[in-house]
Amino acid sequence: MEKFSTLISTAIPLNISNVDTDQIIPARFLKATDKKGFGDNLFRDWRYDKQNNLISDFALNTKKYSGSILVAGDNFGCGSSREHAAWALAGFGFKVIVSSFFADIFKGNALNNGLLPIQVTEDVLEQLFQAIAENSQAQIEINLELQTLSVLGTAIKTTFEIDPYKKTCLINGYDDIDYLLSKKDKIEAFELQKKHLL
Image 1 (cartoon, rainbow, N blue to C red):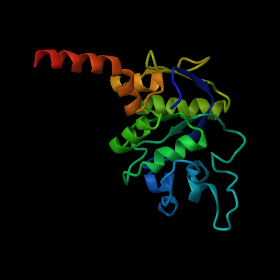
Image 2: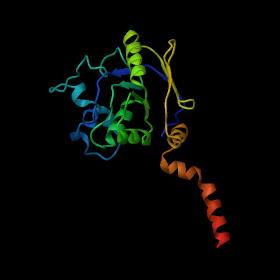
Image 3: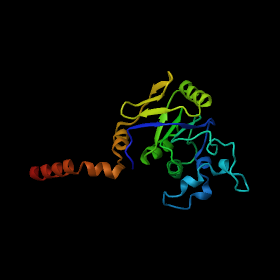
Image 4: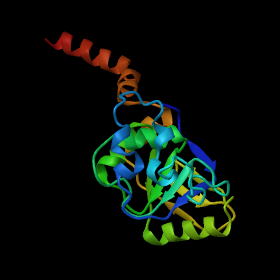
């Protein structure tokens, strides 16, 4: 995974509540077990009509909005536990998802795949939607080390919570195996010490 420290990006607004994982990546695209290609089918049934034409006014299809941050409505990632939803969001190019609430399993899947879910208050979420509506090129800064989110040039700033272990993994670009390997010397020293005690 890529290391994550500070991100400054524009954002794409998706002001829809209760977006479930089947809307994020429809079940018919779950046949593959490789992460590649899932981004192409992110929000497939919202991005394309039945004739497979792009729906021009959907937020992810417009030229007005771009960036690696998705600002989504409340209760994002509800529904089934499919990890493919995180794969699709990351594959599309998102690095951060902001919402006022995340389904627990989706949140875990996102963090395990290098995608940072940031939970903010409903008030802050509304401020973010308003800032993007007023300026589609508004720059949002995410500082993972300080655990802050701010909209540059505005008074919008907030902190967010993250599991300390997952924070360490994101900052260092580790998955769970990489983290264990980073502790290899300590593990070997511990094992050696235990042998001497036997």
